[in-house]
Amino acid sequence: MSGVMRTQVAIIGGGPAGLLLSHILHGNGVESVVLERRSRSHVVQRIRAGVLEPGTVELLCKVGLGERMMREGHRHDGVAIRWTGRDRFLIDAKKYTGKRMMAYGQTAITEDLYAARDAVGGQIIHEAQNVQLHDLTSSEPFVTYSKDEQIQRIDCDYVAGCDGFHGVSRHSIPGSVLRTFEKQYPFAWLGIMSATPPFPDIVYCHHERGFALASMRSPMLSRYYIQCEVDTKLEEWPDERFWRELKARCPEEMAAQIVTGPSIEKSIAPLRSFVAEPMRYGRLFLAGDAAHIVPPTGAKGLNLAVSDVYYLSRAFIEVYREDRTRYLESYSTMALRRVWSAERLSWWLTNLLHRFPNDTPFDERIRENQLDYLAASKRAQASLAEQYAGLPFEE
Ligand code: APR
Ligand code: PHB
Image 1 (tube, rainbow, N blue to C red):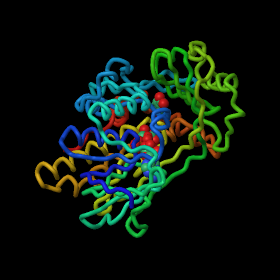
Image 2 (cartoon, protein in one colour; image 1 turned 90 degrees about the vertical axis):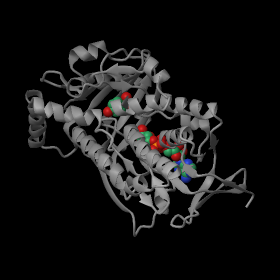
Image 3 (cartoon, rainbow, N blue to C red; image 1 turned 30 degrees about the horizontal axis):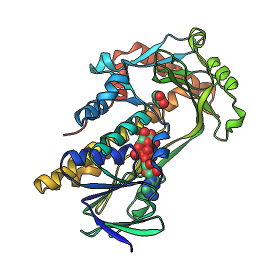
Image 4 (cartoon, protein in one colour; image 1 turned 45 degrees about the vertical axis):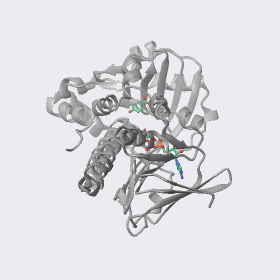
């Protein structure tokens, strides 16, 4: 053992969940150290979704991370659904909740978080290999890792597992304790980024050729996706083919407005729903993708990571300020209620908007009827808008 360090909360993973937790804890006088497996440039360059719920925006502003987002983010009332042969439908968050959504990429949020941690000398250890969690059910847990071929140890009071779906934290919970729930979808999303002016609205298109999505990052940065087969290879999708297929899935007047250009990034993401319960084991608390995955339809992943961190930071702050563990005890149950709501919404939207390989004409009629019902019923619209905008955090 080369070095031993001590902190209050050891945070595994320096993605949005881990960095935000560390930032909020610092603002409330709680010490933490973040251990991240990858390099900083790798973390900052990852491209992920970019639609924020009003509650996420409010929280980021409240903890001092709102300045650039309010300047550069694109506020919008909701997200449109376009469906061949039917009128445009808007999931209208503004009308039914009084609050607007925000398009602001996870990449930008991660940059803002790093800037905030740097400004106060926050400790983030990059390229920490072989992270292992120990004695989680004791009152003196610790974490080991290796860096530059030296084994290091961090003693702590609590461990926050914010290390994403492929992290080590969830796997540190014994199989006899952990229950997992999973659904794989029989398709993926092929996404591209291009330095072109985006289509003015965020639009989900349902078409017999499959789903398509127009989204944005900034006035000169567009993000588009199309549903594709799970085993799709990027080489099979030169830009020109992507644009052709995207436009074929949009209504004509929308396709005519899409500005195409060379892609600056192109990637394929499988769609999966996944939840691990409970989100706590002894002194280990899971947050974000370490505990749950949603399919990207609905853009709930980052918003859920933020709500987990809200609950978890509140719990740690209560422990150190008031010596009470009420919120720590209820963390898993409370966080999971919101997780399952987002799981249900993203599963439902995925089913509504995609074509499934074994779909029958019956399935498609049911989908059409679902959209027609939404278009006709203010109550159905209000219910969807409330969920899309995100349920409030519990007291
Ligand atoms: N040790 C240390 N760090 C690890 C380990 C490990 N064994 N395994 C993974 N990590 C790091 C990853 O390199 C990554 O930077 O943990 C971080 C987890 O970050 P994310 O995957 O971004 O997860 P999270 O912070 O929960 O953010 C959720 O990410 O996938 C999207 O849609 C999701 O927007 C949501 C957000
Ligand atoms: C995105 O902008 O990347 C995005 C938008 C909406 C979604 C998913 C992803 O539902």
